[in-house]
Amino acid sequence: MVPAKVYFDYLRNAFKSHRVRGYCVGQKRNGKTCIFEKDGKLLVAEVKGKVLYNPKEYDYEYIWMACEDIIARLARDEEHRQKIWMSWASPTNWEEKMDEEIKIRRVVSKDVLDAVKNVLKEIDMYSLIEHGASDDEFDTEAEMIVEQIKAGTSIEEISGIIADVINKMFDVNIGRLKYLKEAKKIYEVMHKL
Image (cartoon, rainbow, N blue to C red; front, side, top):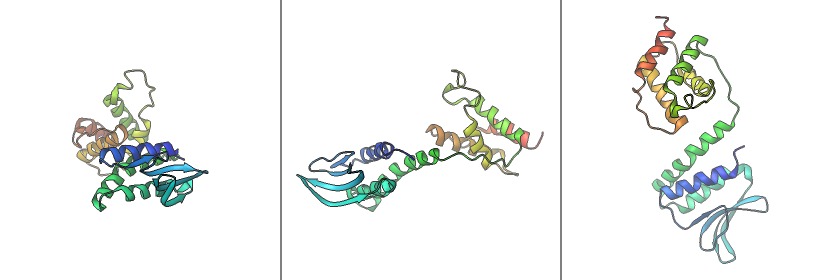
């Protein structure tokens, strides 16, 4: 399970990037709308002096709902709420997915998987391999790419898949046609050219 700190860190970042004011995340503060822990539960409330207005209590397994609650209370309107929510939910949801056990499914041959691994080592994001990372550094990304490659996938589509996975895993913004040369190598292995 993803720790509450992760949810709260992303919540603070979302509030900050969307210029939300009047909140406190992780503790109770007078004059603010807060989300904090009390007696083993999460509490969302407006704090005025010693009085909690509109308090809502959540068990930790419902932390997602508690965070949605405070977002809804602090958003100016539905569009603002949606923007805050997306800024918060996208990375939080990714953390949750990373917390799940990774299941490896082979849809294409081992040769194609090896070709993808080699291509990722050549790309070597952040020069990790160059600076001593282990040979299997990009295996997770390779599996994610291979999962999306089907018979008949074009070179352009393979390039897009590579870019999408790299963008997601390394928090960058690379165009979908950047890896045409690398995609061609994978395509050739798929078609044994």
